[in-house]
Image: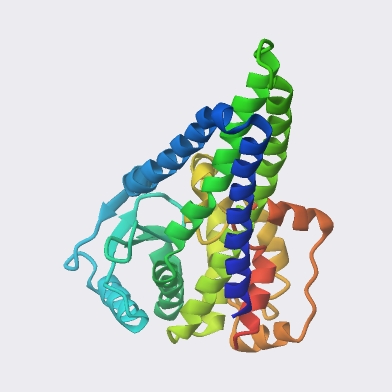
Length: 322
């Protein structure tokens, strides 16, 4: 519940920021002069809508997705059907990504058009319980409408960036205009708000990951199965080809973990695997629930700039669900 409350507050804050930007432009430039710039904001919103409409095809191309028929992988279809029925949503289409990194992800504009995809590497390293936990996480993303929520949140940083480019450089080079000083101020403020709102969107994305983890447990999956799956994903990502990881850098939001941080995550996750079995079992997760977990200041900064929670903190959160 507290995660949902944080999300509502975050959405409200970003809406307030957007309202403040428009109101500030009107106040500083006046209604007549600000009409052109408000039109630019409208264009930015239209660009976001276009991205939202074209997004699924872009994702399929970038992630090398192929549709999988039930006859090709009956068990995968069966698991997804069972989980989506429990979640009360239509069964998503099933896809297979050709990327050589263990991963699962969900995308789609609505619940009815959603698709859940996995990679062959993921199917090779997880047992059925762990696979169910991962797919439950992805089904929860669909149930929670996370794609449209993050898309809506991303409107504010994009608008701020367009205002920064238009107003700052317009104020510098349009010397003949009466309000070029005001335009310059708006541009500087927009740049600052762009960085702030981008951090808030990242924060919102991390909240959605925590909520999807909770959603997987609510669908009947054991927290230690999801913790072990994440542990195995980190190992699999660390062994993946570096060129593949680098090419996927722009698609991190569609990964269960951050592949570029896998090598660092392994070192910390090893401390949770007390018997060095390659899994985080129920007893190990219970022991973690009573421990305080702290990360360094540098790790906190890195997490602030990431769409994914710090992996140790994420598994610590799973321990609270046991």
